[in-house]
Length: 146
Image (cartoon, rainbow, N blue to C red):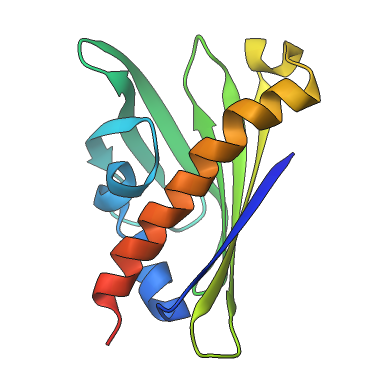
């Protein structure tokens, strides 16, 4: 499992607001290129995002669905992007002592060819992408914070 963290001056509520806006997904998730549809009940358990990964014209249609959701604190997702595989993502939000938010992102490849990569290679590929995703998430949330 790859784990990265980022502290932001944005409030937990502002970070959650970005996560709860399914249409903003490609704005903060590195590799997500466009949204095709968002369940009206996003981010409730079972809700889905239909999006595409990659660069045009080589796009892969992907589906991400919510495994678990605790508004304002936790979101667990399962993303599919065959033929590359499937991942499980766990996002945790905790209030920082300064009133900001500590964001933790854990990601694990759960199916597909990516599971064949040895751990150090997986980490080298996934960690920088996730660091940038959290940077983007924090920037978006900071725009929503007072």
